[in-house]
Image (cartoon, rainbow, N blue to C red; front, side, top):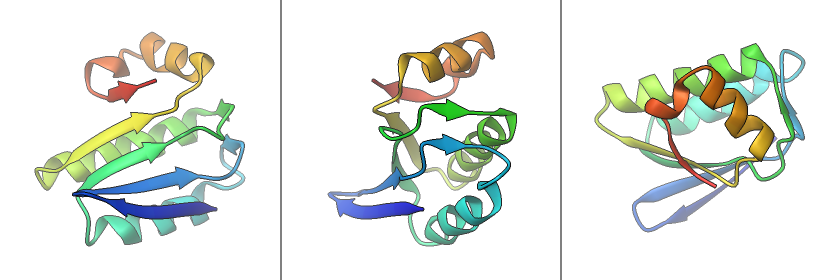
Length: 100
């Protein structure tokens, strides 16, 4: 579901499924939020993700809010152009630190 790797102060979380949607949201959320208990500097690698629905967008917003409330940092990287376009349409690029 995810792969994790510590690099400098960041925990890199690579999402392994090709899609983030209602079918895999709960196990993905549980695994990521378990990691957020100990780490607040996160790089979220979406290189494998080609599809995200509204529940997946909600998950990323929840991750962002949780980290921000702990004075951490979220960097989202290796994001497909299609997903960046969704973030832009929803004005989330104002909040998310996206590194293509």
